[in-house]
Image 1 (spheres, rainbow, N blue to C red):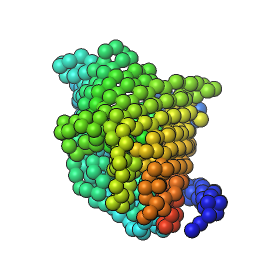
Image 2 (image 1 turned 60 degrees about the vertical axis):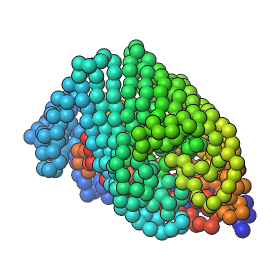
Image 3 (image 1 turned 45 degrees about the vertical axis):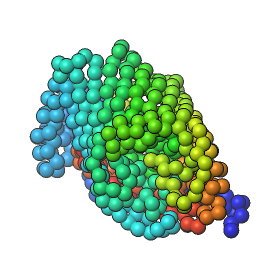
Image 4 (image 1 turned 30 degrees about the horizontal axis):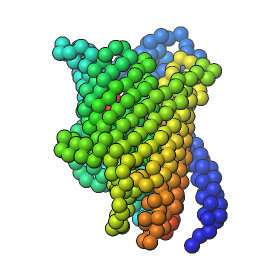
Length: 468
């Protein structure tokens, strides 16, 4: 049995070592891609004299005949990719103009536990996300109404159980249903604009999509970080099912959500219609508000969210974002659950002419009801950068740290059969734009597991995303 002091010192040591190792790995990966994939950039740090990217491409890169490939800021010659983009882009632009936006995204993962964790194993799997957005006004049906559908197909395997179940290493593979090959509509929302700033919304909502709408840098696990602890605040695991039925209102500030009030079901309905047994276990209420800031001309915000649930729960009841061990424990359900969240985001650097090139910071903090949630509190902080190099404007890099405090009630319930500790981890990724619509990401995670019997998990993975 390790003493608390020894455990704390050990965690600090490996976290410092991990950060150094990850930084060195990132530079190595960056140099490798820089050497092996040479793509000429159509951007210049001084903005240049070009107002049109294609004109810049044509003049500087000499690739005016490579169809729409220049539109991404790269000049490259990938015949199959170029031909596909040449055929798809005009078609999709015409569909969007008529009120139909369709975007399919295919993502493949090869990820494994190199050491430690519950089991050392590598696995291959993937996701196909299909997004369909209908603008009823442009379709001549109903002004101000938008219908958004998200269908997901999951195939292959993942290592969420083998690594650290309390910190799933691949949040995307939790949908539609962890561990199963399945296709389901995980989101079908109807949004009616009352004014340019106020919108009503109802339907079936995907939690990761909602967090991504609030903070696009979270990436839904197919962009940016992959660990669930870095994508969503795990303190909300009890009150945020993977997919749920609900209705509410939101306040917009331009294209960003400033505030929202949402009433929704407590049950996960990712693979069902959502109408069966709806509200049988009470209701969840979510309130969110964000204060926008501007620091030296760079945007940021402070966001606050509160959840209240009237349902009955036990701390070890299954949740979508935390895989709780099944130890056959019996306990009396408790009424109600709450979660309080705080979000801080700040752009640290942004190119004055190419705003997509930037460095940003996002941190999520939360506390939850110990009696009903497997997570008592959680925190993460992450730095992400896109286009740090003018020659690689679409490449991205990120490094983050997360902490998940296992709830005292869950720890006490499991103490006769399993000794639990808090989870700490670091994650780092480098994403290379191989071609237009093709992104290859190397990902490394080092996680101190909740089960004290397991050694520190080292998880390495590759992610290949194809989509517009």
